[in-house]
Image (cartoon, rainbow, N blue to C red):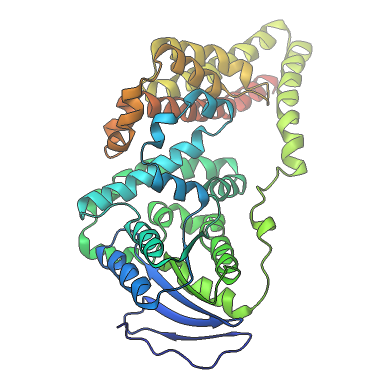
Length: 406
């Protein structure tokens, strides 16, 4: 039996009592009984508690902190074999896939270290629901939408720090001991990875936690059945309880909208290349052809060198490095094409990923060297690092060009 007293009063609002172990809350919301389990995503105890609770209470519905995509990936462990890396690059999803791989790596390393599968509590919830005849409802927002909203809410410098934090946080899992799992119950997996950067970037906390708290609460509130068990990460439990208690309808369509680029962003997207072209013209008209030519060479050199360095850091093929050097000065003046997309496609062509690369992804993401060894993951690094290098090149070239005009 679970040590929790259930409040017998039911009304249109929510009443709650917290279990002694602070992992289970018994709630009543709009005539429904909701048993909320706050878990650690890599905890044997949490996984077993989920199974025991579902078997004991036999709910009509089990809500899980998974989106449709992650639910499908749990069922299809061979999904990597079907990846089309060229399609990923063309659809501009390289960074999103890379972030997903980092999260999967962190969780898998923790799971392997402590002898539990990633998301075992969710797997247990699904299996127990099926055995007891309960309906499974994936209640989280799509991970691609969440990450896109984080990305769109950041400025350029924030994005650079964000990517850097993701990469350097990769080794953090090696220092975590089993006792630290209890601390991880208070954080989302991505929150743990971004422990440093999230302090200075409120958009991360807002999008990863607060918005998803709302989304999860509404999906749980509107789930079918009168007795519902919801399995969520402990970091989300307080927010979910708060939004359930508010008894207000939450607009899921709004939370599912990928924030569009603002008018200023759209204008700058074209205005910056136009301004750079005007700099070239001004250089020729005011300082003569030598100054104008110097400005062009500064632009080519800065963009090409930094983009090439980015590709080099990703251990790209020599042809890819050359392609990035040639492409960057041109793509930086074209808002529709990025240097990383060109270099990524070249890398995919000259080092075409094989089936063994796709099959090796689950193991290669466990080690930092594996990211550079695996042809698929290295292509993602080529795209990301080349784009960063090209951006740094532009930021370097413009002040030097203005100095010539002065």
